[in-house]
Length: 310
Image 1: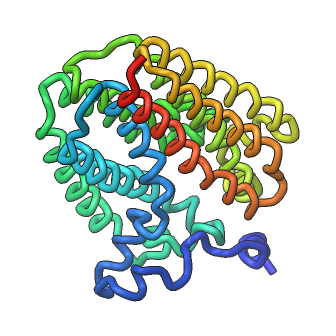
Image 2: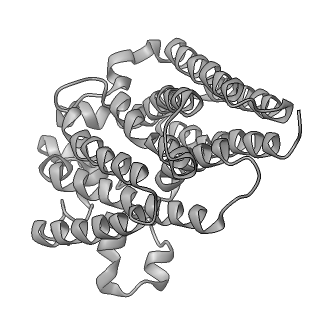
């Protein structure tokens, strides 16, 4: 058995079996929905929640449901665009690893030309969403495209692509604030930095489930850089995130319910570090996905504080 076949025998595809795509989507659309990872919504949540953080931090009284919905649509299509770029760039690497070999572009279900076209459609929808906002927010959103398109290349040159992902995935904090305020400020800047450390932590956990595949494919990650010393570093990343979230709340003059939410968020992060087993891929995935709950806890704290007077 050759090296690739041996590697294939030890790993399974990362595409979930028999999801809503298989049950309800037209057959021709299924590879494109899988390319956009619509069967794995955790990435959408982790992109969307920072947007809602920034929006809630800026909005003192009234929630604009139209803006909330626009951010949700934008998160879906831009997360899909990011996945499409990633799979176009990594198609040769993905084809060598069993976990990713069945992905639509790597497996040949979608051609490169069709993948590029699909990317264009998603970017156009994202641009339409962006154009619904004020001029400063539009400029800020356009700036984020550079982060999105550079990310897939970083795993080839640095052990810290997770840091760049943090810069990318938390841009929504700045967008959410800017849509309301029309400018930036100290509070969203602190919350953005908090999100970077949060992502650095949770995506390092995620990367541990892929570390054997990454070694095989010759790409880098923070999981490989930190190895068995990961847990102390997770403590550092999460402590920095929590401190900066607290500082953002103080800068925004949030009231006491925010700090109760921050307390529950702290317990959640302690639990993550306590229970994660970096040598158990399935467990890493479970802990990684739990970060959606952390995001909602912090969001609930911000919203509660906005409706409770000092």
